[in-house]
Amino acid sequence: MPYMIDPGTKPGGEEFEAYNIRRWGGSGWTRHMKSEGRKDGATFKSWVTWPNTFKAHQLIRLAENKGVDTNLSNKALFEAVYEEGQNISLVDTLVQIGSNKLGLSAEEVRDCLEFDRLGDEIKNDINIGRRKHDISGVPFFIIGAEGRKGLPYAMSGAQSPNKFLQTFET
Image (cartoon, rainbow, N blue to C red):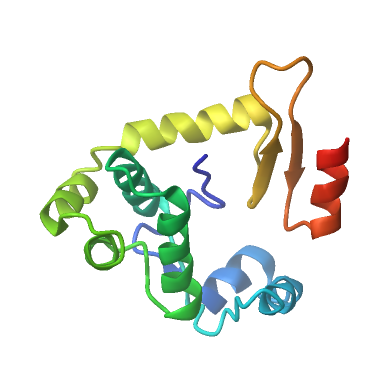
C-alpha cells in the first residue's frame, strides 16, 4: 500500500541533509539502515534528495494498472533515489523512469502526474492503510490472508530474515 513518511515534504523534494537536520537533527539515523542495505547490494551511494513521493505513488499505480509488476516499479524508483541520485518528486524524472524503465507511454505518464489523475485514489489508500493496519512507517509488512480468523501479522521497519521465518512459522 502507498505510504508517505512526511506528507509535508516540499512538493519538489528537499536536499537530503538539510531535510534530516530540520526533521531529526541530522542523518545519523540512516547509518544502520545503510549498513544493513549494503549486505543486500543497496549502497545508498547517491541519496541526495528527500523526495515527496506522492507523484511516485501515482506512477506505481499507473504502471500497475497497465500490468507492470509493482516490484519492478518499486525497484526502478529505489534505484533512482538511492543509487542514481535522481529526484523522484519531479514529473520529468518520473516520466523518464516510466517510459525508459517501465515501458509506459511518456505522454500518458506526464498527463497522469501533471493532473494528479490518481491522486485521490492514492490518498484514499494511504488513509485506509493508517486506519485498517495502523501503518505509521516504512517498510511495513502485513502477513496473513484477508478474511482469515484473527488479524494479520504486521511488522514495521526493516526486519531480519529470521524475524520473517518466525512470523511465517507462527
